[in-house]
Amino acid sequence: MMRKSVALPAVALLVFACMAEVCAEEVAKSQGPPARRYFYQYTMLQTHAFPSYEPYDTGIVRLMFERIGTGRFGDDYFFLGVTSYNGENYSSKAGALYFKYAPCLSVDKVVGAKVVPFGFIGDLFLTGQMNSGDLPYLRTVWLYGIAWDIANLPNHGRWRFYALVRREDKNATTHQYTIMWAQPFNTGKIRWIFNGWGAHWDNDMIDDVVKFEPQLRVALSSFLAESNFLYGVHIGGELEVSHHYQVDPKTYEVCGWTVNPSIFCAIPF
View 1: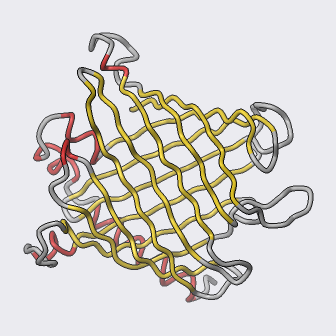
View 2: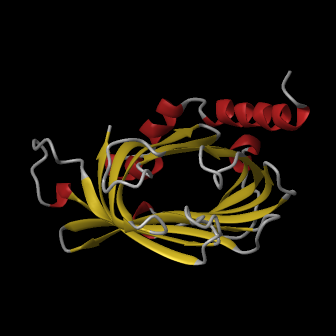
């Protein structure tokens, strides 16, 4: 029988997810041209290549599936990543799996009025999230709390901030602060996107855990005709920056700062 400590967050997450997905197609139509809809609703497959991944000191490949869905009362985010942590350079064998699901319910949309009376704040959200993986430092984590968007950003950009309660297996309840962003911009006819996420939290083992993953990507549609099969593809680079997050596979000690650059290709569906 499922424990109450697990069942209650799971039920809340499902409720948020169902409400966030209501009338998704209706909202997508109301969001105007495809250039705007892309940043609020998409499904994408990314392939990353890391030349020398710390602390494993081998080249690795990471395959990531991402989906952002937009509904009448909010949105949801799903992520699944598979990485080749197995001691071989650029191995095709899966070594680690990680996934995340995070629905957000807009309080403004539910009540039909602006909740936070500040012009620079957009919607206020109630949010829940589940993270899990199959490495020792990727324990199952439940998060819940509030989030808010920054309003009126140029080029339909989105910056969202989260203040969350963090419940991690085998650790005391603590807090986590997260930012996610996607900011398009142009240089001449070339279309770029600066996007990513970052988070800070503590746990029983160590304080000041930090993880940031900024990306800079360019849309191949800047150079190709719409009839080209690569028209919707993005290419770019990412920096995976972490502090007290990685575990050394030889000593099993928590690492300090690590910086892991990668290049990637992102294919939308």
